[in-house]
Length: 245
Length: 245
Image (tube, rainbow over all chains, first blue to last red):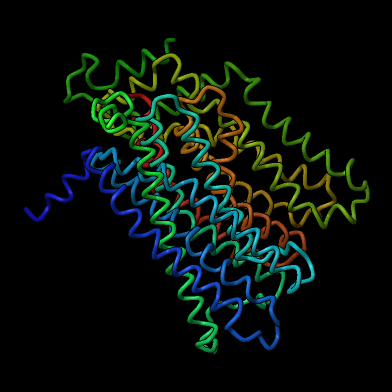
């Protein structure tokens, strides 16, 4: 009885409807939190004593960076569930999540490089975190490329799930090797996010943005999942009924 | 092909009594011998990655400067970038022929652990492409103005690095087995995962060129190789099975 909800996740129409019902519950709080966080971060928070107003790009950069990693992990976990329990919906989740994660990674790179201009005097610095993000972006591109290379959807699902699991094992190794590489060439980077010394007027909007971005991701994921499920089940009768209804 | 028949005759399920079935080690040796023999019959495939490596190394003095004193500074980067690209080039041959003529399918059906068989295949691939590259790297180093004292370090680091490259490449090649023109995709999948090898390998080479102790970086390269040996065959076997379905 307690596991019924889990077993029902295997049913595409159930997932389609549940995702549709849940999406607004994430989308509206996300919109409110992001607006509140932006007001808090861009107007209410005081300028930094060293960076002036330039630090404010952090309110977009840091949550994007968090999601870029979180989404990749989620993709690997969903892929693993799909491989082990042969659950098609899990593969659909991974497929729906990949482009969102890649977009967050891209946003992290763009905002990081824009932040770099006032801080470092250049748009690109081979900073370990930016470099790892760039490599993560390539991992996303590889994942989506592999998925797109197969005609057969089931094979695409399972092969890309193996890649996601291999990738998630390697992400920490890549990250720490890049940090180690960087420490050979220059001193520790000047940017430290989430310093314990950050005053509440700066920190609270940041935490609100983290939560808002995460909810935004959940809402977009649910909407994309609906599209993914419809596309995968396009020959099923329930889809015809759902659309004509 | 007679080699295939030899192998089949010794695999269980091919009319042999189980009591006289060969041990896993014997099968691995047999596979190694078969792959080496087949490769030497088509020796142009062996020479191409080496010629490519030499060609890429030649590009840099032509593009930058013929002065050995300046080339010495970039030698480690040139050698490692060329070695990674050359080992990528060789990957397409790893499973392609065996997948096309059905040999790979027979391996999967043989009742033997596919991980063991693929490990043997990867070992053969390393002997055929990684080891020759490692032997050639010191020569290329001399051409780039590297002092002779650094050559053992280059040999050791490229030897260890190509082991990991072959293992990562086996995973990449297994994932893209069902993809028709996999070249660019294969590089996109494999290169981000190879970054730690590049970092530690190039650093060991750099230290060797400067005449400093490079043991620590070699140890890290060896750690990556051992880690790869442990996990890469599992991922490769899973990917091969999915692609054969």
